[in-house]
Image 1 (tube, one colour):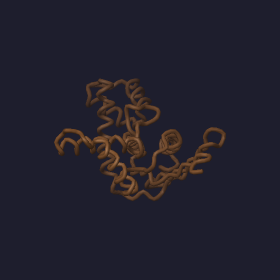
Image 2 (tube, rainbow, N blue to C red):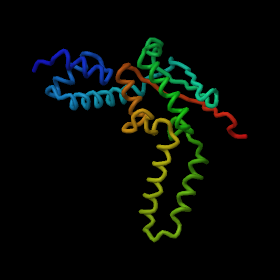
Image 3 (cartoon, rainbow, N blue to C red):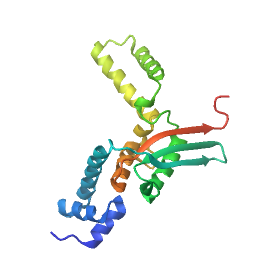
Image 4 (cartoon, helix red, strand yellow):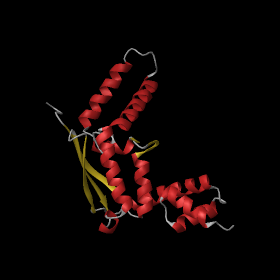
Length: 199
């Protein structure tokens, strides 16, 4: 089946994927735009998994100041090469991550970066909430695990809903950017300052 150039152009504009990838996606999906988008998402996820083991030592440190100097963010995001670190998709992603951190105030990049004592205290809070519930222990444990997972979505940057599109997480956005750039990209660390915080 022949794919129209306009369809490839439209898919590329919507996803940011390469021309050949868009053409292949449309061919594989029989010209169905939504199926082609889903095809590209799956391809990006597979690409991201393959590339995660590769070293990412280049990148950018980006900053953002919001609200007349009331909130400041500094973030380090790594790529494999400086070529990708200077690319438009990478630069746009670092800017979006600064805005995400400013708006959503995560505590850590991912679960593994959270202070174990903080996680233990949060679990204790959820356990205390479940005291007196007349439910089997295994059900209570599942509820506590569910509450912890919900909490991770609030405090871990990669698990948070993306501020511009809450139908996807920051991790989903990262996967898309890895697919566009063709390299491993890693959010390494960030710092967020808010005027008067901790006083």
